Length: 261
Image (tube, rainbow, N blue to C red):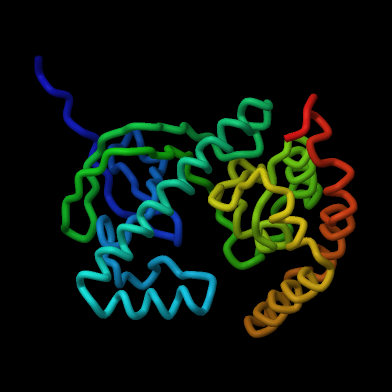
């Protein structure tokens, strides 16, 4: 029996948790492919966008590990396992969202649990087998809280509320107050960065602390002032914070489910 040629994907970009690839086949050009990040395997361990630990102790440990080849390999292996676990959890949450009839919140996508592909990264060929997310390419990615006039602000509030009602939320303030996780497709707001999805309301409840929201808002306003941005951010924040807060979370959490976790 003739073997089927493996899909060949070319490196496009990376974040902390995922590497992103594209297929240059014309019939597949409108899609991207995401795999769990594996610095030290797929991308160099010292890549500029490698995993950034949140705690000071972990960052120091990572810096020391990077200086010793043996420890570096061990550290890279541990991070690979962590990223794989997070990626599989993310795929499960995407399937949960789709199962509740909320797929219109997401960019069109397909969760693939065990797929073999060939990855091309800066002239190096890497064979990969494992979970993969195939996702439609967006028309526009919100990366710096810009272009606020391009969508109805109620869309982002409604998306969060619908997710909350089914017991899904985000683990970061950025995903709530800012637009970095969101994109536009055919004029509609869609979620493209799904890496911070969680079923733990405590994760987002802590981020919805008024002081934390104030801090994040001030940081965003400071950055946009440095760029002389004319975006109506203050109005946007006021609008969002009226409906995305702890009281609303407690009111809506799992409201559409017949049982509590």
